[in-house]
View: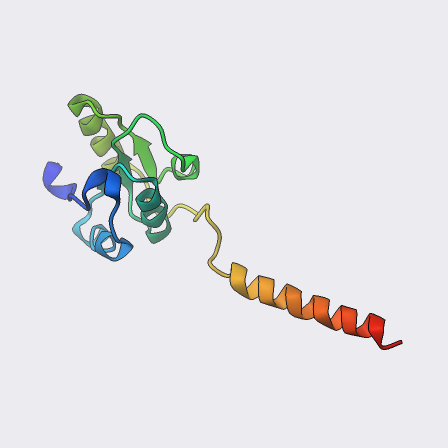
Length: 120
């Protein structure tokens, strides 16, 4: 089982998401200590085992993309088993990546409305 869990980075420092994208092809998950990485892994559909007792990204827990394992070897092994057996394909809790488009549309529409008010 442990062959399926790949080391994806230096723990608390995080890792680049491009490196994490290789993990699903191996059929595994990724241990992490960095909240930034857990967000990226969740967005990319990579299951994650958190090597801490808490997370600033509870959304990843809510959708099943992440398991809090703490730092004891027994809990880490349990977390790895749990995440390897978990379903993937969760809904991205951080949005659809189109916020910028919606903001531009809103600003454009707002400007047109202001122009209409000043041209009476």
